[in-house]
Length: 402
Image 1 (cartoon, rainbow, N blue to C red):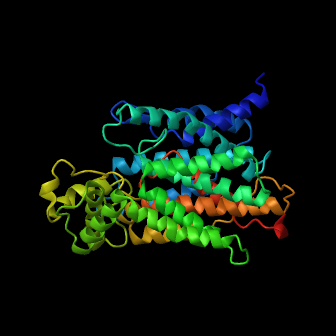
Image 2 (cartoon, rainbow, N blue to C red; image 1 turned 90 degrees about the vertical axis):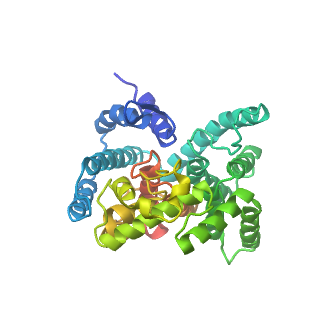
Image 3 (spheres, rainbow, N blue to C red; image 1 turned 120 degrees about the vertical axis):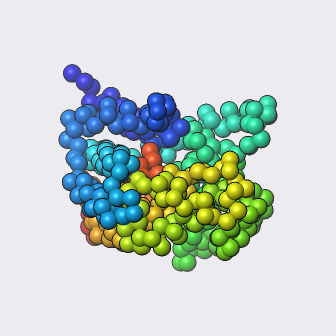
């Protein structure tokens, strides 16, 4: 007989590993991620514990496939692969929350994740410092922890940072360790030198403003200070200027590589929408549209070694959604976000602090969603549906409903 306590711990921590597992994969003709192993192993265990799968996930995806029937490239093997991946990863995280939220409050569960995430960085930051001092970084001194890129690290680190920041204010936490963890994570984000990190911090400070409190003066001061730090970063300011130039002229002459990746995908999407405004190029087919249109981009011949950069994910989720399922698909996803009602698997007695923490969870999950739309366009990256369900299961909870 399996000890339930051990089983719950395994499911919780293995899922937290899955959320941070982007760089953990084996290439066997395609990238077989540890995420897939965890999902396949844990799904039956979650089912044994009463986990639920929401049928509306399946029917929403079927509608998106229906849209793809009328797209430029129609339904392809890529469409089938994306459908299967989205359905299983999305369903797994819903199933995970359906099991755990019967026993713990959602803010308590996310607090465990924050503690787990901090400990990962306790391990990886010293490694980063040592490798930097020994010149083992090959000229790239941006911190990215266990993740493949600084931007992907920041997409998770910024929401964790602001949850700890909000929680300290809500619960009046003044212990040295609580304060240290907040500053520690802030330093990690700065060391990433990522535009996603800076933008995320800016968004978080905007969400922190409460005009009724004097303490918000510090937050308001922090916003221009953060923007000033962003522009002081040569890498960031160069990318901003090159991107503005490239998009306004739709020309990639003498722009940096990051700007080239973004501008080239915008150019492709502009052509996709010009060809099929409503339905796009089809789920999983952005790469096909990229191959169709990229050679028409002015000055692209100067970047022969970089053609195809971010061609699979369109460089941002918003761009990929627009490309693959068109304006109709974008409107459908907006409809889902507005219409889906929050569902709690059990009614806990929430106090004022619990409600405030749930509101903090809504804010930090919105930060993640904005950053995800801005950068990195995989339909089922390891952490994506963890944060999306965090948003849906935390929102609209107030004292009148508990």
